Amino acid sequence: MKADLAIINGLLVDSKSIYPGVLSIREGKIVGITQSLENHPQEVIDAKGLYILPGAIDGHVHMMDPGYTDREDFTTGTRAAARGGVTTVIDHHRTIPQVFGAKELSEKREYLKTRSIVDFGLLGGLSLTNLGNLKGLWEAGALGFKGFTCELHEADALGIGNLIEILEEIRKFNGIALFHCEDDSLLKKAEERLRKQGRKDPLSVSEWRSPEAEELAVRTLIYAAKKTGARVAVAHTSLPSIVLEQAAARAQGVPIYTETCAQYLYLTEEDLKAKGPFVKFTPPPRKKEDVEKMGWCLAQGLIDMVNSDHCPYPREEKEAGLHDIWRAPFGIPGVETVIAILLDGVANGKWTLSRVTEVRSEKPAMIYGLVGQKGFLRVGNDADLIFVDMKRKRCLDNGQILSKCGWTPYHGKEMAGDVVLTMVRGKVVMREGKVIGELGWGRFVTR
Image 1 (cartoon, one colour):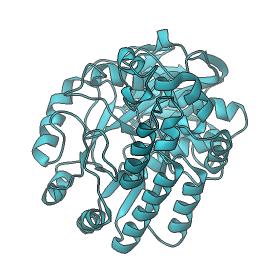
Image 2 (cartoon, helix red, strand yellow):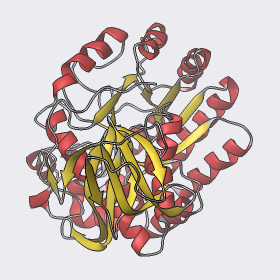
Image 3 (cartoon, helix red, strand yellow):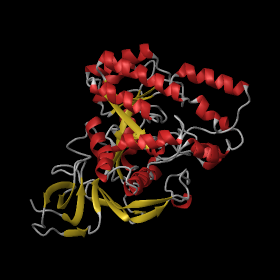
């Protein structure tokens, strides 16, 4: 089949190997992977000296649209995604109205039709009252569901009884649910104690959102998944001990997947102490030795997904916590900087480029049912591609952040490696740091 576009001289990266090849693209799909240029297409891109990876699927973003658009919206958020080599975002249910049923999902899908530069999928929410809506959400195209084991962001805390009931329902149609895991009762007792002590310093967040609270909630979820056989993922795992517990459960046949985020591979308690509200997220940054061990877990293949948990807030809302950490909201921007953290780790020998492809593209496609469309350099897949220059340096700077908030917790950090081109379904949406994609090019994706 004659191609519209060929990409020559690049090194193609998958989870197993890096190899030279020519990618042929027609009508937004990969139609050939060969060793030499064939059929002389209309357009040729020379990728000499560059690595070509499948575009990233970020399964954990909060674009806040419709609803909280003072924080972010789909237009600014997907511009940031394109800059960061993300070609598919999976947006969470926390918009107005929250996506707790098929009607809200369909309305949100329609609303976003003209607002995205990259492709997008949607998650439905889990609450104490929407059990009867889950199958309808799945059939309407939700890629999965999101729930919380603690009260946070106006969400219901789902205890073990609720978890088992929900997972029994999801198991019937082989759905998948992602859970924020912190034990509600431990959090509440810790908060009560810290407030009585008059603590307002940043490190009180570490004591409040303790390792024990995360460990207990993850163990409870493993138990529920084992009992029901339902597929679950643990959101933003922050501790190597919990990564290992999830891996042990998987080895026993429990269908559990491990997500972490770039911040748990880079930021530490020392950053929380120094930057306060601008590094306030939960679970919070952990001790330096835990961060280093999380990198080891990634290198060993024990982590399935590295996502962003992109959850930005305006600078003034964060600054409210400079002298009283309780007053700052939880959340940081990240959809455009995850790749910087990961490429820098490659340059420093912590993990490989193939591992980056696995956790950013291939495994997320498998987990969220997008194999055959997204996540792989394969004939028949969408031509969602990123070109990476490992010789380039990128200084992360507040002034260059495309997210609406205009700041990053990594301000001033120089990272090795950068994405120099992002392509969504054969169309270039970002080149040399400039987003050139059109709103409305991004389309809704489902299984």
